Image (cartoon, rainbow, N blue to C red; front, top):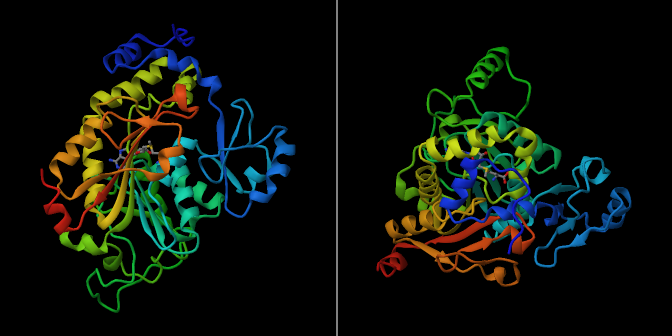
Length: 395
Ligand SMILES: C[S@@+](CC[C@H](N)C(=O)[O-])C[C@H]1O[C@@H](n2cnc3c(N)ncnc32)[C@H](O)[C@@H]1O
């Protein structure tokens, strides 16, 4: 028999777990899940240096390039490699979700729920010196933390960050293709990004921060762009072109990650933190979110729908959540597939060596915290079929 949870989980959370068939004892295994770090490409040679600094071995994660595990109690924040942005903390299951996208240099990648940004950092690393990555999030303060992260790890060069609702976001990537309208030559263009803003702009932003609101005009607000993100030199209408739906087939993104907002119940370490934060906070943040956040599963489905809409034909989307429930994962994906003949669920080839299992829907994957030694994660990989293939995909 499983050891009962050592955490005093509140009744409402226990009822939530029971209703979703999740064993509460998983929350007592947190101490057996290692911490994971990813070394930025080119820094593989400093492993020994880091080991002597943090006084423990960096175990290579055999199934995921660039990843290392360390015991859960070891802190990396004081190591030089961390402070100098040569490595960052990211769970191996999260790394697997990014890896499922098969990002190659030159891709235009969209991360529709990007903050705080560990996955976006990895995406930018994989792009190397070609392509762009666009991060979108609805929470201003989390997006600001994301910008800090990109700058710290020196990966912001090819990125753009937008404050926007991911269910309605429609800004295409900045490519060389003539997707947008031709515009008036006298219009002002975007200059190099700077954190120093005119007084009026700062005042408006502070007001918005206090209200924690999305821009009033409904247009996504660009809060950061790198030197090689393609934004500099564009006019506003070129950054925000109004495209027909069909235009995304060739002007859309090559890869899209929808790492959707969820109840976080698969993230054991996250749930454990509520012991210090107070369990009432868990009820407010996790369970209220489930009940009131525009109905969480509807939000997830709408994020998935919009991410897929912005995808190029032949492009790949990964849908992931750190919830273990069927409702937020397989049910969302099944409903989405049923309404989209141009969406095809894909086998994740590299997953043969991953410590995960199949989800209820064949080809989807689940990292279970008790067997994977990672945080819990659900991953589904979906391809956008060109019209001819989509016709033959109708059941
Ligand atoms: C699971 S977290 C994403 C973690 C992130 N991908 C990472 O690796 O660091 C989900 C995020 O979705 C954001 N979110 C919630 N609703 C959203 C919406 N309608 N549009 C865009 N982002 C949203 C939340 O603010 C939160 O930052």
